[in-house]
Amino acid sequence: MDERMKSGRLSGGMPRVKALLERFRLPLLILALGAILLLLPSGRTEKAAQDAQMPAQQTQPLEDMQQALTGLLSSMEGVGRVELLLTVSGSDEVFYQTDVRRSGETIEETTVFSANQSAQKTPVVTKTKKASYTGAVVVCDGADSAAVRLRIVQAVSALTGLGSDKISVIKMKQSQEDGI
Image (cartoon, rainbow, N blue to C red; front, side):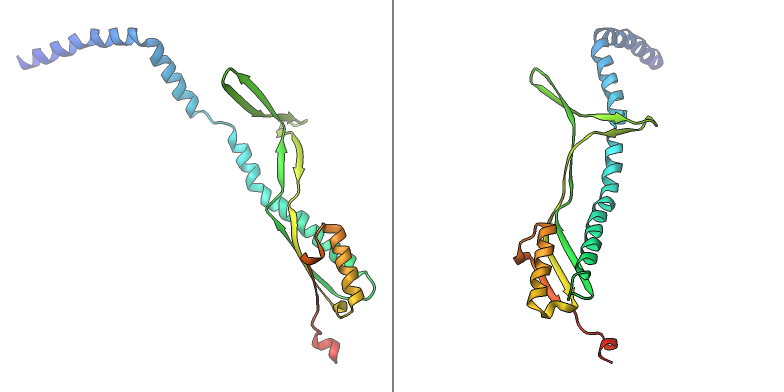
């Protein structure tokens, strides 16, 4: 008898569930579509991969500048051997072109991409702001001469935009080979 009551309740509940499904079909459909959209990839993975590659690209221009400046300073009269260290504040900033769409109170901003010949999409860069130099240390043979120090400070200042108070010129120690 208990079996009959349970099966009666179950079979009596089915029409009720069907009625609820019929009544709330549209909201349930919208809820299901929203859940599916949330599970789709958002396209942010490309940006994350680009951000992961940025530190290697950012250090290269600094090293290139240090090498170029070292070569330039060592070619100056009276300077001799040179070692140089430049420091920067922050990192390069890249600004991408965006489209802004306004719909009532909602503002949607999307990054503009361009496709090249291989159909690979890349973001359109509008401007790049380089990291600023914060200081320079120059160690060289000729630093005992005030005239050489002044020319080094002027050269480093002209190329990096640093003030003379941010540039230090120090005499390089003599190696034992030079003293023999």
